[in-house]
Each structure stands twice: as C-alpha cells, then as structure tokens.
Image 1 (cartoon, rainbow, N blue to C red):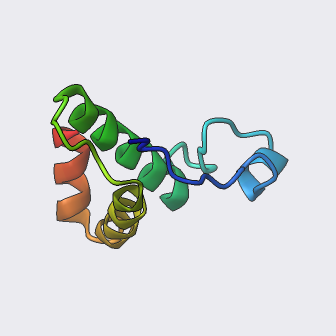
Image 2: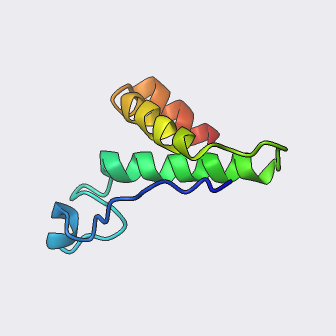
Length: 85
C-alpha cells in the first residue's frame, strides 16, 4: 500500500514570495502547513519502518494531517510531538 497523500505545492505561497525557504516564516519558525506536513511525513516514515503486515491506508495520512493541524494550536501537544517525532 502507498502511504503517500496528495500534497499542495507551496512554492507559490507567501513565504516563497519573500525569499524564505523550507516553509519558514519571517521569524524563522515553520508555518502551520509546513509543520503539519513535516511531522505527518516523519510519523508515517517511522510507522512504515516497522513493516507491519497490513501497512498503512492512504486515507490515514490525511487523517493524521487533520489531527496534527488541531495539535498545532496547542503548545503542550505541539512540543510533545516535536520532541517525540
């Protein structure tokens, strides 16, 4: 099974227009979309390394991104995710 989810091309976003790279905002922090994408990809890669017999459903990547988007606004959960994954 493929764990790849559809990705939005952020190359024409506001950060790209001001010359920032890798999803950084002007203060050097990752924007919400880039943070969610980075941690969702990292979590999926960790899970795929376990080589479970059933794999990961492609729809789960989208669910994971929705859940991470909710965690982004909560500093304690965000810090936990950043330190764990």
